[in-house]
Every structure is written in C-alpha cells, then in structure tokens.
Amino acid sequence: MVENILEVKNINLGFQSEDNFYQALYDVSFSLSKGKTLALVGESGCGKTMSAMSILNLIPKSAKIISGEVVFHGENILNKNRKEMSHIRGGKIALIPQDPMTSLNPLYTVGDQLLEVINIHQNLYGDEAWSKAIEAFEQVQIPDAKARLKNYPHEFSGGMKQRAIIAMALACNAEIIIADEPTTALDVTIQAQIMKLLKEIKENNHTSILLITHDLALVSENADEVAVMYSGHIVEKAPVAMFFSNTNHPYSKALLKSLPSNKSDMLDTIKGQPPALNQIINGCKFHPRCNFCMDKCMQEVPELAVIAQNHQSACFLNN
Image 1 (tube, one colour):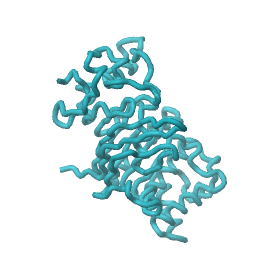
Image 2 (cartoon, helix red, strand yellow):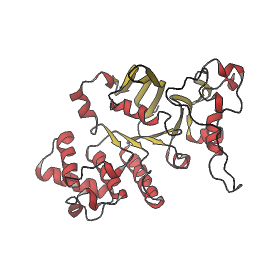
Image 3 (cartoon, one colour):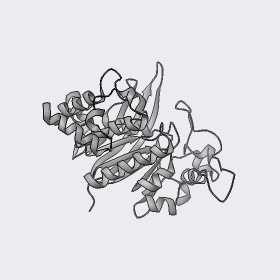
Image 4 (cartoon, one colour):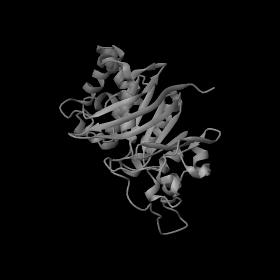
C-alpha cells in the first residue's frame, strides 16, 4: 500500500476586506503519496497557489484559514507555532516559487544563501556545510559548482537560478517539494531540463512533488495523479493515465480540448471568464460556462464523488 506523506483535509480559506469576507477555497482536499507527483491544475486564479501556500501557512495577512487540516507525518501542522513551522519550511517541505528571477537575494552570493539553509536545517557549518553545498550544486548539474557558489544571483541565468533553488531543497533532504509553476519564466529547452531534473530527484530520493501548473502537457509527462481546480473547488481527481483517457468533468474536458492539436488549426476555447472572488454564483461555479448546464446545476453545488476506482468528479451528470 502506498503511504500518504501529506493529507490536505477540507481546507476552507478566505480574504477579509474592509467590509466583507470573500471565500477563496472550499473544502479543498487531496493527498500526496511518498515518491509520487500530484499535479494541481486549473486556470489562473482558481486557487492552486493558495492551496499550496496553505500547506506551509504562508498565506497573506488578509487571508484566513477558516477550517481544515494539513496532516504531515500524522500531525496537523496548521497547529504548529512559528518556530516549529520554520523547521518544516525549507527543511521537510521545500518550495520552488513561481519566479526564479526574484527568489534569491541579490545582495548575497548564491553560496551564502545555500549555506544559510544548510546551517539552519542540517546544523552543519564550516567545511562540512561547504562540501554539502558543492554536492547539492553538482546534483542539480550546475557546472564548476565550487566557483559558481561564489557568484551573485545576477550572474546566473533563469534556469541556473531555478537549479540553485532546487539545490536548497536537496541540501536539506526535503521530503516534499512544492513546485509552483516551476517553468513559467523559462524557455522551452530549459523547461524540459528542469522537469527532467525534478523527475530524477523524485526517482532517486523518493521525494514527493506537488506540481502546480496550468500546462497539461507537463502534467501528462511528469505527474502520477491529477487534481483539477475551478474557482476554489477541486472538481476532479484521478491517476494521470485515467484522467487523460477518461476525463469526466466538463471543465476538465474543456481544458483538454483547448490544447493545440495536429488535427485542427483552430483552438477550442472555454466561453466566458472564471468568476471574480467577490462574484456570487449559486450552485456549481462552472455552470455559467458549461455546455451541459441543467437547472439543478444553478441551484446546488455538486459534491466530489467516486465515479470509478481512484477517480472522483463533482458533476451532476454522473448521477
């Protein structure tokens, strides 16, 4: 039986404005298995990044987790205090943020920043820490590792910066890597190299990866499982092969149809726009854009239900 290293259970989260509270996540639940990759997919603004930041409790000051749990090694880490969470972040659970260009401090060498992480999370100093840093750089295939550790971030390309951030996760033996759109700011060739590197880390170290992306091509090649989000709800969950061969939810189907195809020069589009955070939509949040909308869809919110083994979908068409 595959061990679940992380379980996100019924996270409800919202934002407080001056006069109103706007809910952004609705009972978001998913699990991450040891040594596996779960892809969290959906359009921009659907709640992917906020779901991931909830795991690390790195949400904005205006945001509040109303209810739910994040269970890591049997403990709800949302109950941890600031000091306890600082040991988990970067050490046990590492984050690869969206923009590698702004993720490193320009005032310090890349080596100093890597050594600081090693000092804090591995309690290594001096020559031991330096050796660990060189080893981490070599693992992520940064050439001339010893010399490159003395460089400043501006001397690194975008791909090299991303590798340096991944090296920090490796140096701390992180059990989980949260990769938030890890290839967004990189060209296609470098994207492939970064994803290949993450795949090797997963296979060699049995690291679990939460991949946040809107790129379904990346998902098909790199993920073991898929969770599709729309407007703060998870609407479909399935193993990757089942998802692409037997897609169920109308939103998931629409996403797949919008991918480029050799069969046609025209791209299918999803009509309308995702709802704004302050927009009130009764029933299924996708119903204004759905080609299969029924009266029931405008009145009730469908529950995420099992439709086949390991396959869940939130749609009244399954009833």
